[in-house]
Length: 469
Image (cartoon, rainbow, N blue to C red):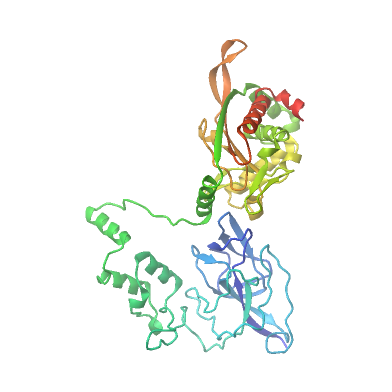
C-alpha cells in the first residue's frame, strides 16, 4: 500500500568542515513538485556559492529559512511530502538507505533510537517554520523522517511554547518567527519582555517595534539613535553597517590566522620584462594560440612553475600538529580572484603538469568561474603556492599575506614603461616589480632570494627557461 510521509532535509556539511551557510535564494516554493537532484536552493558557504540538489522527489511542504538567513549545519531547511511504502515507520520493515548525491551528505534515515517527534502540519506556509527538534551539527544524517500531521492540526509558523513552571524552569523562548527574533536581536530587545499580539500570542515585528518605541529599553539601540538623529537633521544615514559573514568572514579569519601564525618575510625584485612582453605579443599573433586568452599572468605563472622545480621548499607546508614539514611533489597553483562576494583563492590542480596552452585555458576558466561566484569548494582548498596579480589595479608592489597552509605567495606589479639601463644606455623599457612573501619557518632568506632571482631571470630572458627545465 502506498502512503505519503513528510521528510525534512537538513543543511549538509558542504566540505572542509564548514559549520554554517547562508541561504542565498530558493529555486522552489511551497507546493512545488520537485524531482530527485533538482536544484532547490543556492547557499553561500564561507568559501563559495553552492547549488543544493533535492535528495527527494516529492512536493515541497515548507521552507524553514528565508533568504539571507545564516543556518547551522544539521538544521532543517526544507520539508517534502514524498511517497512511502510498507517499509515506512510503523510497518515493521526498515526503510532502505539512499546513496549520497552531494559531497558531504547522504539521505540516510535517522536511527530508531531517537525520541519521536510531535506531529505537526505543514499547511501554514506564510512564514518559515523553525523545527522544534534539530540534529547536532556533527550529525551524519541531514535528512530526517517525520510522521505526516493530520490536516486539522494546523499550527502557526512559530516555535511551540511549553508551559512554564513556577520558577520558570523548562520554559521555552517566546513564540516568534526567525525574522522577528533577528529583528529583536538587532535592536537589543529581550523577547521574554514583549507581549505578542499575533495569533496564539505570536510576537510580530510590530510588537518588537512598539516595545522599543514605548521607551521600555533603558538605552536606545545605536541603530535607532542614528536614524532619529539623521531624521532630525533631514539627512540620510551617516553610516552603513554590513554583517560580517560568508566569504568576507572566512577571508578575514584566514588572514588573521596566517599573519599571526607564520612569520612573514617579503622580498622585492624590480626587473626589465620587455623580452617577456615581446614574447607575449608573438604568442598572441601565433596561429597555435588563436582563440586563447594570454596575459602577463599566464607567462608569469608558467615561469613560477618552472622556477619551483629548483626550489621545492617554497612548495611545502608546516604541519604544526605533527611537527613535520610536508613537501608537495605537485603544484596546485592558487590564483587570487576578486569577486563581488570578496577575495577567493581557487587553485589549478597539478598545474606543474600543464602545457602553456592548458595553463591558459585553466586560468581563463578559473577567473570566469570565480567572478560568477560558482567556484566549487574543492577548488578552493588544497592549494600549495599562490599568485596575486595586483598589477591589474595599477599597483606596483605590496606585501601579500600567505594563504593559510602555504609557504609562499607572489604578487605581480603593474608593467610600466620606464627609463631603464639597457646595453649600457638608458632606454624606455617595460618594467615590473615582483613581491614574494614566504614563511620563514620553511624558507630561509637565501632560498627565497634564489627563487626570486631565478624567476626574474626567466622573465628577463624567457630563453633561460630552457636551462631550468
